[in-house]
Image 1: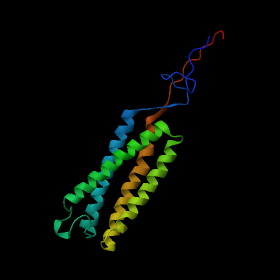
Image 2: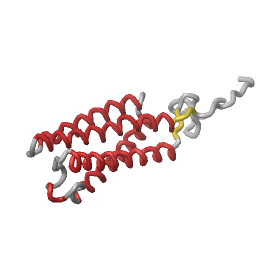
Image 3: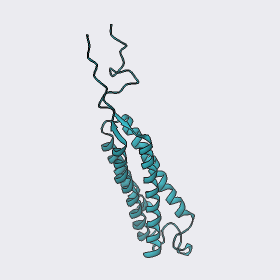
Image 4: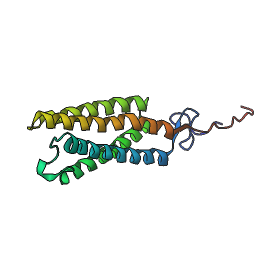
Length: 167
């Protein structure tokens, strides 16, 4: 007599050899590290634009090299973007075929959108270009680092020993 039949052919607690296992600690640890890198790139970009190139992004010139609380909020949003990108990647790994390809397309298009977004603001061209450049670099952090984090977090499920016997 055959055992119970499950959709996909395996009981819910078993995986076939082709099902990837994900190391959650490694994925989310790498995602948090990516978020920190993105936030630091945002801060460095603001410092370069304001302090070196004298372009008053994120705050008026009178606020100094780092700007005001807007700069801190910009850094936090860059970090939150990294966490959200990690969540998206995690969901794609669990549910999508070719998750790294889909992630790369989604992250690339989101990077395009955040790069173009400053040009919709009513400010000087230099501020628009400077902000777009920082946004592009922050987006590229997500595009470049998170697929590597995911690849390092995925491992094949351990093969089950083959049981031979009468059928």
